[in-house]
Figure 1 (cartoon, rainbow, N blue to C red):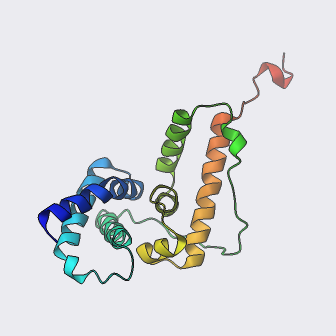
Figure 2: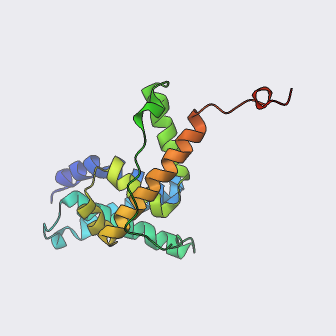
Length: 179
């Protein structure tokens, strides 16, 4: 890969790789360092890329592993939880957003996904921001398909509940009958 081709590769994937690293590390400086380190690793190991997956999936796997290594070194590894692979899918009702503009929706989604625990945020980011398929997420994270689906479902549930609590009107004191 020539320097120019590598620059194009970096330009193509930098923003999405940084988004993923931010979700995992919850720190901009650490995320930038992780992405830089990931691109260096990708450049040094480009000869090992076999083409079994897309080059983007291969890079995201490197970013994911780099972030896990940083979390491990900082003793901040996310806790694992028991998973129920038979959970019913959760969806966010679109009418929640009927009264607000698109920019506000995007801000709320970004804030709530940033506040989400790492285990869920990274899967949500890969699925919704990076537009990865279930199979690509399995390949990137090494999680089972059931775990990916469960974490995505639980992430949606957290996001839905957070959005509802922010957007649905709360009863005022006067409406409570205590006048």
